[in-house]
Image (cartoon, rainbow, N blue to C red):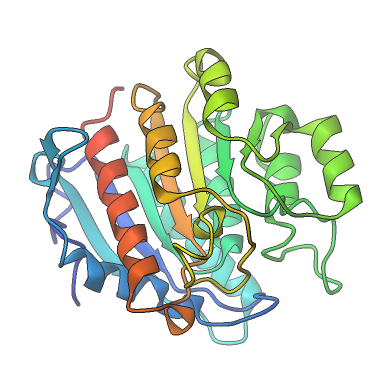
Length: 284
């Protein structure tokens, strides 16, 4: 297996564990996310391990790459349970968990696992879409309902779901978000900076859908949404979170078959590298 750049084989003496989750069962437009984890790993090998923005090297942030979890073809329930079971085992052992998707539904079993260990956890959700539908295509567990399920099933209070950059959703999703979550549509850096003091009071999980980026810069996703953020805007916002107690993150919805020259997978790899460097030592 080709590991993410600087990823170790052993769990000994590491703070973070990276797992791939090649789930592609509820995607509603263009499929291909099952190839996301392996392609992001491949593209990571073309990056330098040193970050000019952070002035640190990924080699100084030890993490293990355990490869892709085995999905059960055609069995969504068992596949999600696999993700939950592996993730809770890692969290219980004190590891912080980075995940490469796969469709966005992978966040739900990871958050079910994280909330067992960190009951007061908050989620920062960066996305083009609200993902707050109660059902989609008759399914309560779907990549379009994932954040509604996270808010209702994994958090002490739905307002601990902080949503930024959202630019697409139904009227009902918008109303539900405004009423229940900490909902900041269309903007990222300014509202994020405002709530940093709140987030500093508790452990944080980051869920990053690659389609928050404008499809002109990140075409390799199944549900592209025009008028998105630039990669630079996203990176600058992530750096605002550098002092938070981030116990896990995921980067999801990368769809290599829909990409151009691997640029979206390369961007996802760089985002993962920056996150692992920023939070690599942990602060517990």
